[in-house]
Image (cartoon, rainbow, N blue to C red; front, side, top):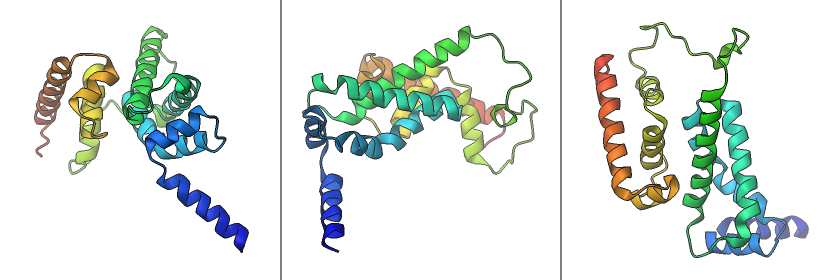
Amino acid sequence: MPARAGRWAGRKREMLMDDPALVEALQVGDPQAPRLLIERYQGVVFGLCYRMLSHRQDAEDVAQETFLRALRAIAGFDPTRPIRPWLLEIAANRCRTTLARRARRPALSSAEPIEDQVDPRPGLADPDDLAGELERGLQGLRPDYRMVFVLFHEQNLSYEEIAQTVARPVGTVKTWLHRARAQLAEDLSRRGVHC
């Protein structure tokens, strides 16, 4: 029983570790720190990757690559900076690279797995499925607009954090976000979806 209590106390200490302490633990080589980093941020990173790539396997691969790159670069990371925007910046860059590779790839054959194919026929969606309609609308946005929209509305990053993540000025981020909202609203309205 005392061993179990000791493990719980260590686990509780890890869960309460703030980001600067986590970065410090990573930088000094604490063997538990990479696991904690991944546990803490895997949902956020995977969520962004999945929204951007719309393909589970690609999103998993990019999320994994994001953490590998972060762990390799952590020695030079400033522990006074927040780690979440930095991780999302790495993920966003990896997503852009993956999307660019996809665009250069020849068209997929009909051997593509069924679950990854989108049904192109109009009117088959549940009219009460607002989440599904929003998802379809998001997929219609250009990647930069979609990324800014997701970072702002789903990841709750500030304009400044998004600007850092996408390596663009704050004014550009605000413009892209405005255009994304307008295009999404127009698309939903055109399809008869009323929020």
